[in-house]
Structure formats: structure tokens, C-alpha cells
Length: 113
Length: 113
Image 1 (cartoon, one colour):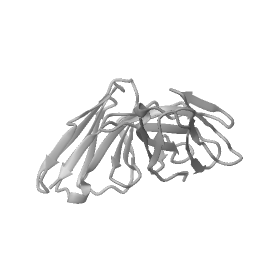
Image 2: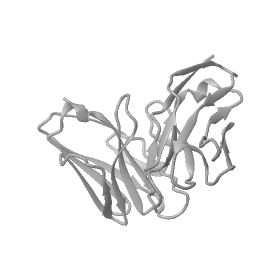
Image 3: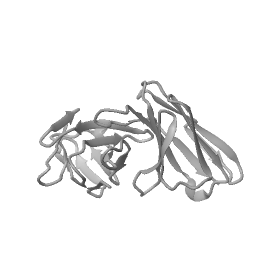
Image 4: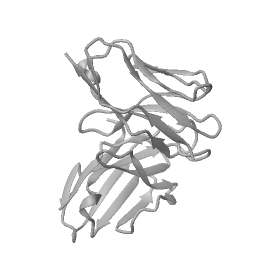
């Protein structure tokens, strides 16, 4: 089956700093890739997605590019805010033809004022 | 508001109790999922239902018993649980076609004493 590895946290940044959270995957074919975010006390929310190679997903200032050459889908934001403090999960389908997703272990981001 | 509602949000139960978690989705989806989120562990897929039929059981102990009476409702019946079953239980739903985005509820935080 498919799998995903993302960088360990926590990541602590000052407000307005640049953010990168690394995500690499192992997959059969070219599945859709996702970033989810979990704010304290809440469930997971889709942050962005990319459905094919070289696609760039973007939302709320976050971006990630589907790179098949490096099997990566790194999450970036140019200027983080305190409100971005959350846990971020990279995800992809468990396997070809399966809709359930497998998730990375999550990266906690803490942004300090 | 994600369109997926889980109740109760918090549940404390003894090891001999029987309780149920409920999930309802208002998105017109036909697939529903249970995930388990434990501290310091990746999200674990438990069950998948498509059009009310269970299509995946990820080797979940029989003390967890799912029920899907229709495409909008999903239950997780709990009995004789162990303290290590304490976790956040997340329900999700999705369409059965397309790029595979899952929509999550806010979760039910379960504590087993």
C-alpha cells in the first residue's frame, strides 16, 4: 500500500516567518495528495490538495506542489500567523482504487507573537 | 461546520460499560469511515462503509462494533473496552467517485477508566 512520511515536530516559528513542512510519499501510480490541518480540540479539515503531478494546491496562503520526481508534497507558507498554530497532516489514498486515506504522523506548528 | 456531526463530543466510561458513538453527515456522501487518533500515533483507519455495506475492517478488536443503517448515519458501539482504547474517534465521509477528499467530524474524545 501507499505510505507517507512527514517531518517530526514540533516546529516553533515567530509570526511572519517562512514555513516549510516536508512530506514524502511512496505510492503506486500517481494518486491525489492532501494536506489536512487540525486545530486544537477539533477534527481534521482539508487545507489543500493536488490531483496530478506538477499541480499546485493552495489555500489560506499555504501552497504545496505535487512533485513526482522527488515523490514530495512539501507544505509552505510565506508568512505564518499565530492563528496558523495547529497540527498539519500529509495524506494520500491507502492504495489504488481505495478511497480511505493514510496519514503522516502530523507536524505540530506553534507560532509565537 | 464541515457537514459531519459527531456525538457525544466527550465520553467517559468504565471497562464494563456499553456505549455508542454517533456520526451523521449532511453532505450526500455514500462512504463513511471511522478513524482512531491516539496520542503520539498516526491516525488509524478502523472501518469503511460504502452504500451501507462494510468494505473494510482494519483488524479492529470485536469490542468495537460498527453499524451503518443508511448512508447518512454511522455508529460505533463500544463494550468492555480497555484503558488503551482511550482516544479521539473521528468519523469521516466522502463521495464514491472523484479525487478522494474526506470530510471529518470534530471527533468524540473517549476516556476509558
